Length: 119
Image 1: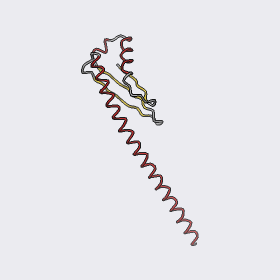
Image 2 (image 1 turned 45 degrees about the vertical axis):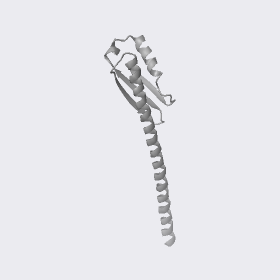
Image 3 (image 1 turned 90 degrees about the vertical axis):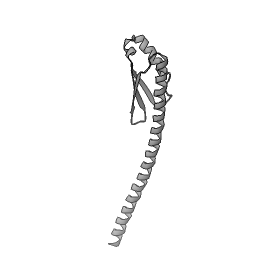
């Protein structure tokens, strides 16, 4: 009977240790994830500011820029940028393509990111 109680106690202690280690590892991963999110948010804010400056220089003053981020499970990110300005509706497809090319030159270089522009 004593050996059975000792075995149960041993199993219980092993489970406590496993859950404790798992909690510690998950906490460290969460902190790393939060740090990465702050870094990404700073890059995104800087990028939107550069985008607005570039568009102002191109003659699209006071345009609206909306950026949405999609983060996939593997860490890859996709950004969808919507640019709102009355003059953009009057551009030909060639002019839109040229503007998208100029905008793509301001992207932050990260192989895990993909940018989509909606003019």
